[in-house]
Length: 498
Image (cartoon, rainbow, N blue to C red; front, side):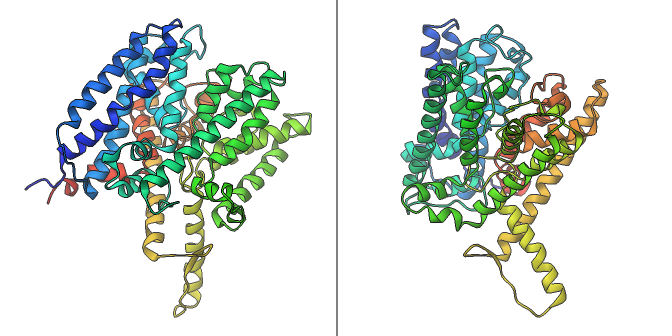
């Protein structure tokens, strides 16, 4: 039976994206010229992305992108850039990431903004500043989306750009700011860059005035690059706990904004702030953060923290980092009581708002699910009544509600299968793990969160897991970033058939 997917078209467009990966690779390359790292560590991947991308681009001079090609292109792009992005780790030959499976894990964790790491030693004694900078850059590139960036700068992707963004962007529907999809992509990246630069300036400013001595220029840039994409990588082994309370307070509002719909933020920043408090998802997002923050504060104040201001800061910080899937740590929450850890684990399944850089299921989907539940209760009592599901001023179609329900069910099922495989494989190699550790590892990967509890806690890493477990986690990160359907559909046989 004839295949319907135009492979040459997909490879050609992928080549157009891949060759531009040489641009971000040039940043650590030029840094390495005057630094300690061998410039070839970045020059070889730069050359590989340029040559391979150029050759692939010539496979189809007039690519016509259809719906099936869209799914394959998005999935292939994220895997392809991950493979190239892992080359610097291998070529540097430093630490645990010099092993192929670990390099792929670290690269996928970076581009998908997961923040899970297999680095046994996060320090400049083991890894060069250039490698650590590349690690931060991968998260910044993946935050707003590689495809969204490609549409913003590459004319070849503008045709079919709407379908591409729908397949990559987090949420149920892509919120257009302007009628033209290219302009919308550029506006989103403009806002993303502006917020990143602002955060970097504020962090470095706190260093200059003596409020955050450890937050030098390198650290300010590094953490600005991983806060807005809700990434969580840090060149410090203790994450944000290595910095002053001032730096932590500066990061808190930017983590909050990273979890907000960027299209909504743009409208609010450009003269319509009422959009914020009229948006149901934004209000529910704020309510979840406030309620959970208060509960965690009550749980940890007194015993863990003597000063109320410390308890407020750490509870708010950790709730934000879990809900928005940023993955930072202002404190080793592994030491908190079991009730607090259980609540934080539950927050791993919330996610940011649709259209944000956050991972997870997304607040909008939970709103639709809750309203669907109450609608079902209502129609059970009044079978002949007609009731619509409303989110703000929008009426949610039954088809949308059905897709949301299926997505959540598939998300939970994939999480459970991942946890089961990790549990079995860990038992096979003699790695003793508690249930919360296994479940948090699976949830942290599929939700693109990063740290979990116990062995995979904020001050630990994923190095101890077997290659098979790491492969499963890599797949979970990949599938979670593309919100499952985009990736899973290409594994269905009918996808390839007439």
